[in-house]
Length: 244
Image (tube, rainbow, N blue to C red):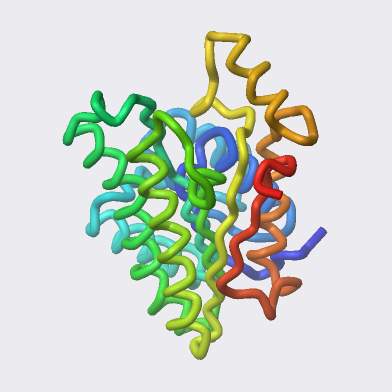
């Protein structure tokens, strides 16, 4: 316990799934956390359950003004910003021929533009604290090809590249930037009414199971903490061996 004592974190998409697990684990380890999401009721409930350790902020990650507001909140409410987890993301499954421009742009706005805006917004608050840690949630789809998720994969490859570029540029500011690449995790975003779909995923995974949100949160905790003080520009797969 106490691995994030004195730290202030923003976790986007923090109302459920991996984001909620990250919020709860960070708070348990001593951080003050801003729960960022467009899902107001769920996000507020998570923040309320953590008492003084968390506050909810309704946050559309594709809007510049929302990023300015959430970083201002971190400074005004908790005194600064040390950790940013760019976790918010959306998934759209379709063949390339059935990907509309509107679908593509919607995924890019959240998954790619949102991460860009987050990294940019975190720089000055983190410089003011002498450094910080940015953890970008990419995907296994940001390391290898996948079918029927053209826009999603495009954005996750972009997150992989942005992570590397930001890590190089911000290293001298002591701002570390790393990415996590989950496999299929048991979250609402990937829930399926087709039990055969889960069976296929399990058979294709060397560990023969899907992952749990807490398993991503634990890696995010390590990267956010001072235990990872010499890690930047890393791309960490957490996928049961799929990309081995």
